Structure formats: C-alpha cells, structure tokens
Figure 1 (cartoon, rainbow, N blue to C red):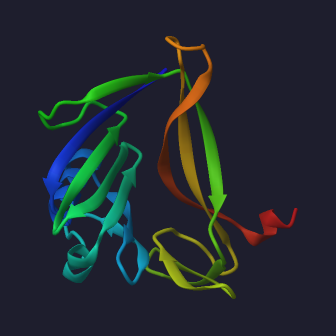
Figure 2 (cartoon, rainbow, N blue to C red; figure 1 turned 120 degrees about the horizontal axis):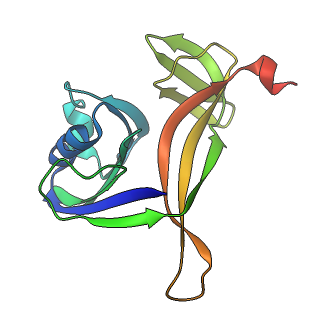
Length: 181
C-alpha cells in the first residue's frame, strides 16, 4: 500500500509554483504549456528561462517523489496541486489517500530520435515539429513516457476499485533493434 499526499497552493505565480516543486520534488522534469509552445525542461537550481516562466499558463513538474500541477487562473497567478509520495516538507495542510495497488503504463512519444546532444534527445516525425526531451538516447530510438496509476477501493459505495491518480515517472528509451523483435 502506498500513501499519496495532496496539498493545494493558491495565488502562486509560475515562478513561485516552480520553487515549491523544486523544494518538494527535488530535481525534476517539467512539461510546460505556453500560448506558442509545448516543451519539456529540467528544473534545477537554475530555474527556467524568464520568457517561458512569463508566458506559461500550465505546467506539470514530476520526479520519483511525486508531481506538482500548476494552472494559471487570474492574471499572473494560479493554483497548484502537489501530489507527493512522502509527507510534504512544508507546513501546509495536506490530505492523505491510501492506495490499494498500482498499474504502470507507458505511452509512446511521437516520432523517433533524430539527434542527441548533452543529455537531450530530439524527436521528429512527419506529423510534428522537433521536440526535445531530457533523456539519454541514440539516433533511431523510440521514447516512452512512463506513468503509475494509483488504485483504491471505494469502501463506502460499492467496493469497486478506481484510479485515484496517475503520476508521470519520466521518459525512457526503447531501442529500434528491441522494437523490431
């Protein structure tokens, strides 16, 4: 059984929410949505580029410790939900949900690796523009996003099992030679 800890944080700028993500999740990856782009970044002590933080309207930061989801809601501020696999480091209020099991999933990322540089793989397909992902890969590899679904039993209603949440675990590589087998 795994505990999931949920805490909500309101009235945060993108930069403030990223600071919470870094404090609670450590070094993590971030899926970033702006009006003109969707990208992946690594969050570390250097933060994100200023123009990305100023135009971001949504992000999901994730590591093996959990996930923080932020949505812009009013001008320059929004709300964040932290889902953590350990009690939050801050003194903020949190709810705990006990899961009864897990299911791991993998989702194929569009395209194949067309170039690699400094721990980043660039994906491309005939249907999408180039997309960079922070993962060690080789040209021709296929990338997957791994997730974990956390399950619980509805004891007060009907006893059915349901998905409490799905957390992103990160990206991994499947080599072309493994794919053809």
